[in-house]
Each structure stands twice: as C-alpha cells, then as structure tokens.
Image (cartoon, rainbow, N blue to C red; front, side, top):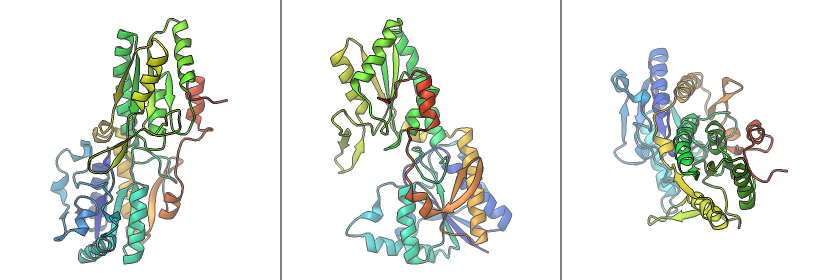
Length: 356
C-alpha cells in the first residue's frame, strides 16, 4: 500500500481544504493509499517528533470544504532559508519524509515554495508533485491558481459596498488590494466592481492622469469614484511603499494612502482608503476555487500513481494538464499590455495608466 503526504506551504487562500479533501478521496477510494496530512507546512517534517495526522473519512465529515485557510496549517516565514540552519533543516525535512516512508509528497504552494522544495527534493530523493495556489495568480504555466477567484470575489464585493458610500458622500473611495508584483486581482476586481481607475504595477501611471480622469467625471456631474490600486504599485518617484515590522519582516502596504494624499493635496476631491489585506486570503472559497482545487487534487494523485514526479498540475485552455516544476517557476506571470482585460478596461473608459 502506497503512502503519500500532503502539505500546504506559503500564504493561505480559499480552496486549500477542497484540494486536500480531493486528494484524500482519490487516493483512498481509487488506489487504496494511506494519506498523511503534514502539519504547518514544511515545519511538520522538520520538527521532532514529526507533526502529522493520518487522514480518514471522518476528517472531512464537517464543513472543511466551505472553510477558508488550511486545516493542516501552513507557514510563509521561509524557515528553511535561515542562514545558520539551512543545511540542518533541509536534512531534517529529508529525514522526515523518509521516516514516514512516503511514496510521494503533494505540495500545495506558490512558486517560492515550489522552488525551495524542488531543490530539497533533488538532494534527498523526494518524490514530489505540486499544486499551484496563490491569490496573486502569478504562477507561470497555469491560467489559474487556487485562491485567485476567491480573492477577486472578495475585492469585488468590497467595491460594491464602497460604491454606496462613494455616492452618498461624493467621495473618491480607494481600495488597496493584494497581488505582490502582479496586478491580476486589481485588474479583474476593478472591472467586475465598476472601478473608474485601476492602478497595477505593470503599467505606469501619473497622479495627473488620475486627476484628469476624476475631473472629466465631474464635468459629467459624476462626483464620486472608485479607485483600485495593487499593493506593489510604486509612488511617482519610483519607490514602493513598504512597512518594516518589529520582527524584521518587510511587507507591501500603504500605496492607497499615498494616492489619496496626492489627490487631496492637488484637488478639492475628498478621498477615503480601504486596505483589504488578509480578508482576501481567509474568505470562504468560491465555487470556482472549490471546483478547480478538487480537479487539481484528483490529477495530482493520478500523477503519483503513474510515477510522474517533479510535476506541477496546471489549468490551460480549460483542461487540467501537468508541466515540469521547472517550467512552472521559470516564468513569472504578470499582466501584459496585450492582455484582453487591459483592453477591456480601456474600452470601459477606465483609467489604467498612461497608455499611448
């Protein structure tokens, strides 16, 4: 009887529990495999004693399918990168994998997790299969990643809620969304939520361009507006807004406040800012994310049964396929100028930057 493990690595998102559930049922019902859930990402294999649970039917008898996050726990602190511990922790992880007697390990993570774990897998003869998850939707070689649809849905709902306040007070409501260096969440939610301005890292903007758009609206007697800005959009001086916390970590955040202050200092337009932050990660998964995660889980187990490792499950042209992990991580997927959604935004009269 084969034994496989599952771990979730990196930031949480909607759909992770659906993927774990799907993996278990496919592995158990189709192939009679034993399935271990590794707790708290790679930490479960690194610590001693090992931290894992054997999954069973009862594990999924509740509401896990509908819950955001991951019931196995995760970590995005990059513990394996600690300069003074990297060798020891890699060895512990490799030993942990072999102690469990695993015939395969399914990693549900983003490009960073895949990159790190692929290198460790090669060193320690670990047989891995990856499932892409990230709200940023920036993993190459797949059209969609688990969590993106849920994040877009949360941002769109926020815009719907902010619109009534914008109208009531004749204000410009600014919504700052996640996405790292990719503008997929901002672009998709901005179109869906009726934004007037969408700012993404990939397309240069100007405060003058934003103000021109808002003034044009005022001439049509439209005194309210919605602005969506991705967290990695730079200030006009070319620098990102980054906060450094007491634990030493640096995180993006604050570009919305910058845009608001610039607008208010140069016009009589009143602005308010909402930064969604982690609300986009922890929301209950949408139907689309549950379906995608379930399909990914089934395919990942089939890859293990076929002995096809060092692969990532992907969604391309409405089909579930597999690609090499190398192919998946070598390409960072950002918003390109010729993206159909960029043209859609322009056609809707949305200011998306100083595009000529």
